[in-house]
Image 1 (cartoon, rainbow, N blue to C red):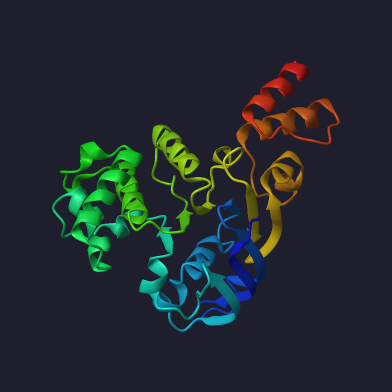
Image 2 (image 1 turned 135 degrees about the vertical axis):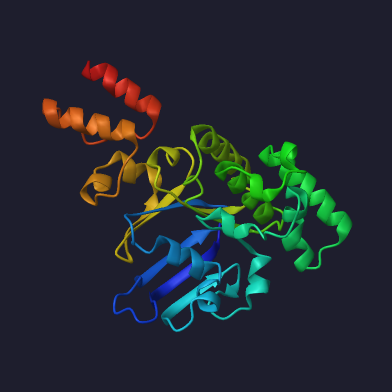
Length: 283
């Protein structure tokens, strides 16, 4: 039986010198091994929430105002030492370049860096590096200088560094922002492989990535929760348009065709295949 591995209770946060709450009275939970998409317009508080769950917020953003409680993998995310949380939660930030030390001459050594800091044995480090490079298909980058990598390559190496720590929870904050279509497809395949093995929070603006990939969604607007539940009802209903959150391109096309032809429907297509069937009927 599934049980919550992340619990957020009445959580509010304001950055220092800001009169506006970045997150406001937020409450929800995420079950173990659940894959949850976090979506919403710009400045909805998505990244702030990721930092809070991963215990980064209280350590790197001093002077902010915190209310409420967050429990992550059985730990108090608002007070626990960051090193302890790093063993449980892997956070991949939107700007993957921050993961590069700038001092390691090869990708292999770059991936090893965080494990060395946590005192993992050399034999275990070697095994984990090989495992994550194989899983992400970046073995050919092993001897490359990290500073010569493309944006997509850097993103993959950053993800490898996170996965090498073998966290229970993986938080991906807009991981496709610097990826081309091939990179997006590769990332989707990686997330699929990890589903059922890790709890995944995926912050994403590309709505086409989410249907069939995430189990549920958390929708934020101006720091508040506007929807928390299964992904399919949200995207196949009209909430995604009413909240102006966004929807997969095929859903938007069917929505517009329905409006222009006055064709009433209670459900919008959730997947690309469903959309093709709807468009075939409309034609």
